[in-house]
Picture (spheres, rainbow, N blue to C red):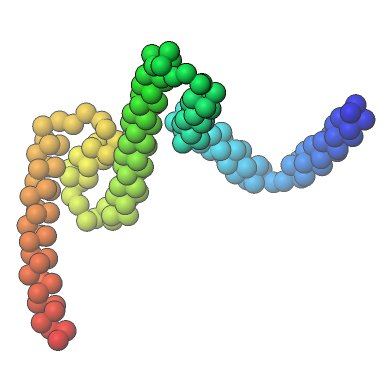
Length: 177
């Protein structure tokens, strides 16, 4: 075992030395790019570690299997009714917690996709104040009354344009046939 450890350490030292030598040969621009990439990776992993939940479905299944095994070992359940009730209540609570976490994750994913879609809209499409109000809404910043006004105004124009789109759809169908 100690020989294997010694071999692994020597290999890792050789690999580390090769990486450092290659890193020294790189130009400054590429070094900066690599540092930025590594910082982004570190930040992403930290964010994911906070929001990650342990594999909840497998942990729940483990709990159910433990409960099943515990029940299989019992021959006389009448004396264990209180314990059974507590275990079933714990399972129900864990289901509720899993559902809440799944809703939170799915809503966060939905918001992230909306933000990415919003980035695809060209800046010239909306006026400046409406864009500022939308940015505040997307980021969750506090909005002023004028921001709320521009958001209401945008909502009304969207309703009007969608109604007009129905008529244009009918006209397009007529022209295509």
